[in-house]
Image 1 (cartoon, rainbow, N blue to C red):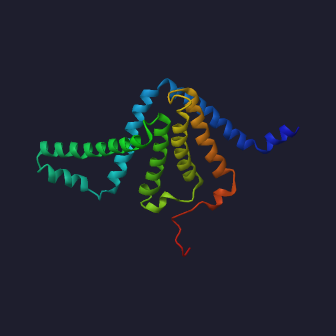
Image 2: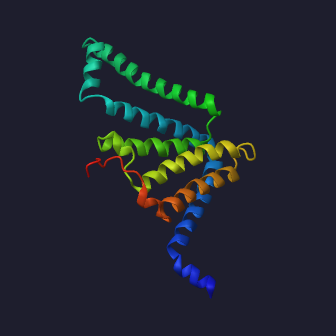
Image 3: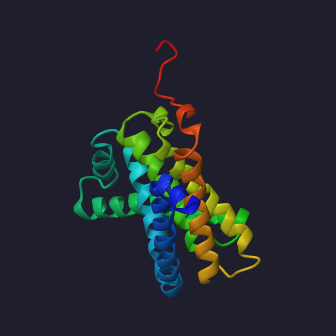
Length: 204
C-alpha cells in the first residue's frame, strides 16, 4: 500500500524519469550503432551554430558590403570573398575544437552534444532575444540545459577511463545522469525559485 501511495503521489516525477531513462536507452543504442556518423554531424552542427552566432554580431548588410568591397564588384572576386568569409568562420570553429581537444583530449559524441546544447541555448537566449543578459533568464529550462551540457562534457571525460566512448554503457550513463540530475535540481527542488535573472534591473 505504501508503494502504491508513493507511486500515486509522485506519478508525474516517476513518469518523467521513466521517459528520460527510456529515451536515453534508445539514444545510447543509436550513438553506439552510428557513432562516427553522429560525430561527423555533431561537428557540422557546432560549426553551424558558431557561424550563426558570428553572423548575428554583424550589422545588417555588412556581409554583403564586405563581399562587394573585397570582390571589387567582380562576380568571380565576390565568389572568392564569399568563400573566404565562410572558410574563415569554419577555420575559427576548427581552431576552437582543436583548442578544447588540446586541453581535454578528443571529444566524444556525447561531449559534442553537450557543447551543442549549451551553445544553442546561449544563442537563443542572447541573440534571438537581442540582449546578452538573456543568457541567464531565470528559467529552469535554461539552467537545466547549461547543467546538462556541462555534466555530459565532464562526466564523459571521467567515464572514458572505464568504458570506451563508443560503448553503450558510456553513453547511457552520461545521458541519464546529465538529464536526470539537472531535472531533479531545477524542477523538483526550491532552487528553481532562486535562479538568477540578469534581465531584471536593480530598480525593479
